[in-house]
Image (cartoon, rainbow, N blue to C red):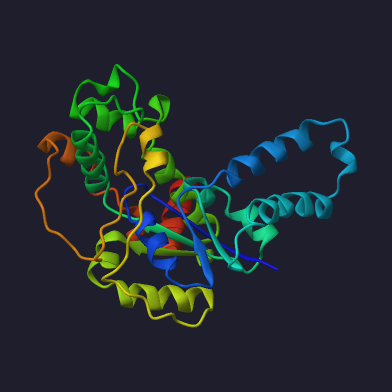
Length: 273
């Protein structure tokens, strides 16, 4: 019987690196985003829209949805599976219903550095048109960054940002936040905390030999090396390539560093008071 945990959070924040580290443990399976979340969402829509909707009770719905997980990961040998999707933080209540003891590991990073990272990848693929933004938005660094932060234009950064905000408000105890900088600077400390969070015995990871790539997936996005991980886990200081106006526009929006209960109280006060 497989046990499921989840990886979510913000893009360009270390989820691929985290998966690559976890994969060193022969008891674990982890990879980049899977289609399971989409399969579940489609299945729920089909059941809800069917004539038999009122005849399918909650237990049967749970069984159907859990069967999707089991079927997708049937060929995977390890019994502990980490499924990855940016959307899971918007589905914490669903995951809690299916797997009451499960946990979600969420990778986070300051928004300007996320946008900066996308820009660096785009610069490395200048011979191709990246498919993360439309043709109009793809003209300049400013329009590309604004598009990534605009739900109406795809919002590849802002949507996970909203998902994470929702998850931390609804079910904060399910979520462990992993700061990208901390993962790079203190990988062993972060991983020990992660193992404790999910209730598993620690595995002695080799942080000097962590390698992963998925060029087939990246080529489909015309963004070569989007999911390539360096061999050694290290922190590299570097200047930003974002314009000052873009940096200042999206800086300081790290709501996850505000304790969830205090934030919730403040929001409640705004509504009631």
